[in-house]
Length: 208
Image 1 (spheres, rainbow, N blue to C red):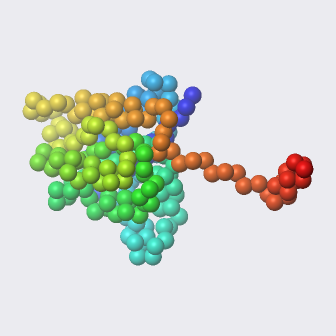
Image 2 (cartoon, rainbow, N blue to C red):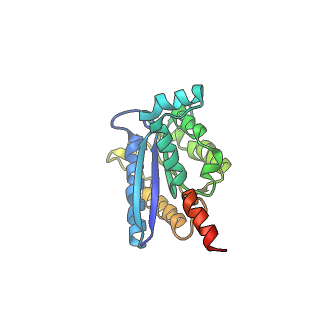
Image 3 (cartoon, rainbow, N blue to C red):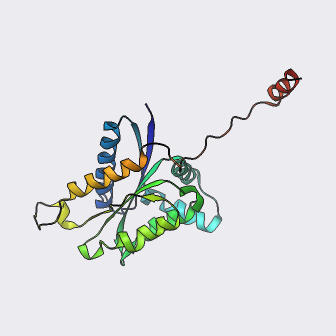
């Protein structure tokens, strides 16, 4: 059974965070979709607020602290990314963009991506199409056609006639899972095993 690794990037600042709540729903729905298709799923959730100081220091020193370096390596090795950011001033958060900026731009090329955003009003939902999608298009990722925005009404019981959040999550997850099936062009190649010099020399001698 093949395994698909998914990294969830949540840029929420509060505890609890609506961005994390949306990210968890997207991850759970995707995991269900892939499990039904016969895949094992490994989900790694990254709370960017826990890395804020390390990200800032990386800009100043050019050095990634061990914790940040581990997360960067995980993103590079993952098959798919669920990226969710709160909206500030009609765009993704500075923390979210700062983390993207410390990555090697080529490391995301070909990876499957599912976008999500949260905000205090539905007027912010276009951030998905006018800010987040162009960013990940520039990074040459493969994005699910459906992105999910969640506003205050999505966490209550009010019926405003819009498609329920759960339905939007399921549709986006199905599209994202579809991108994760089959060969993955964004998967980082396995590092070639480095043999001790003695073994290499023995192999050369044995071949003569």
